[in-house]
Image (cartoon, rainbow, N blue to C red; front, side, top):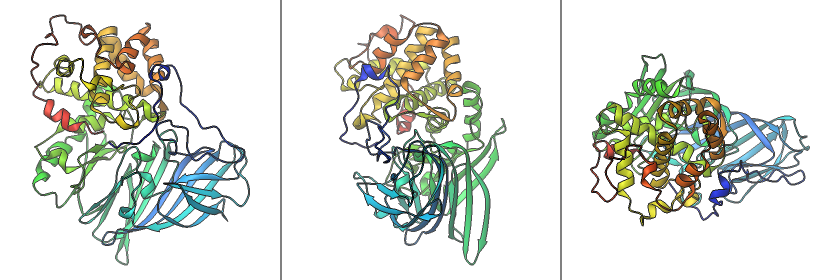
Length: 495
């Protein structure tokens, strides 16, 4: 979605390696977690287990006041450590004692506790802060989006800095409580379950809980005036959706798509195994400056522009597929983004086939034939696209082609066992492309290094035979026919 000037890893080496890690300095937690794409993202020296985010927000002025409490365990001796945060901090307490703090770099909050924290010790960090999130820009980007009646926090690969201090990298997942005080008549939407709400003296407090581990960029907040719908899917999954009351012409198409969330979650459950969280849903705020959707855990963010050309169940399938691929199992580092986007795109292809709008083979054939050998599309490596190409179309489309090639290689029975078993193997944790290779080889009983290297790490167009087993498919030189569902799939491929 955005670009950074960051050095990429060597592709072939990455296939065989595990997650990079920051080397701890003596008593100092590193200001980055060790991700080669984003060296300053996340922090070293501790592991967060829970965030308690308590906020007061005034929609008219975009004024946000907050107190966030982090429960963490030191992974090294710590005389100093960092949090990722961009608003103005007024006070920091570590284990109940005032701590020194300073803002450094683009988003670093450097904290020096009154006494060093020993490795293995559980610690509590309280940060009090205030500010105007929409005034904050980092790397030319803001994840805080203003609406006519409030604001929304949704972005990738960063989103937390604008509204709560954190260890902002998917490798450090935690549970969340989010409590938001807003003027009466205004709602606050977040992840997980709405556990309570109460009103007093003109203000209403909304309390949300996500009791399964969640990456920080998947935490979301939307404040405004919403029409909220609640239901239960036929398979028993609680569903909560929300729509800004001023969506205008996009309202009908948005509802016609997002209100099918329960049905689509059940459909995905039949292919991927049990839904990994306690509730599901999405929200469509009146945000006109963005055109993406994002798999914010249990409560997907959809820009209304996703529905400007009519209903779009394909984008809903894509983002719900991420609840397994990206949310339940999160990337170990950002170079592993294929594990999110290639898989979610492939589930869109399966949905297209289910709806009789083009088979998976037709879609794979269309993608392959649409890009000649000299197309730069083939120079992007889905297994290591680089920070500047992290959300390139090739990560989605060539990434899905890699899965079709795997299906051709191992056969349908083994392929769908891999597809179903993978999110269960690493549920609520993190994984890398190398982990997936090992798992697929274990399930299939055959070496897959050459195949995955060809499709994920080779900057050229692979041989056609790997796409589909049927030799009668159209030759690459033929004019491809666009499947009926392709426009919807293309519009869905934002995250």
